[in-house]
Image 1 (spheres, one colour):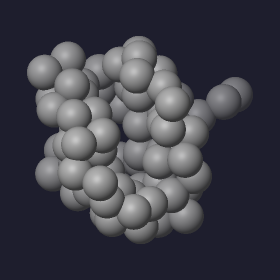
Image 2: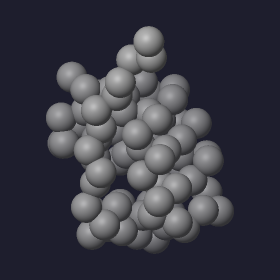
Image 3: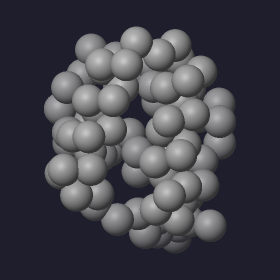
Length: 79
């Protein structure tokens, strides 16, 4: 039986704010990964830094909030 992951659906406003910060601040991939890690940890989730760096690369060129939600779900784990 597959392990069920219980990751919340983040509010659209929070995802949009994160997306805006990632797109407008001109940070490098390490800084962007730190921002995403901070976003997740502020909501009670942990994430492997390497997985988050990969997530940041996948987010480049994608503006869909649904895609962003999926990627955050993939990277986050309940602490």
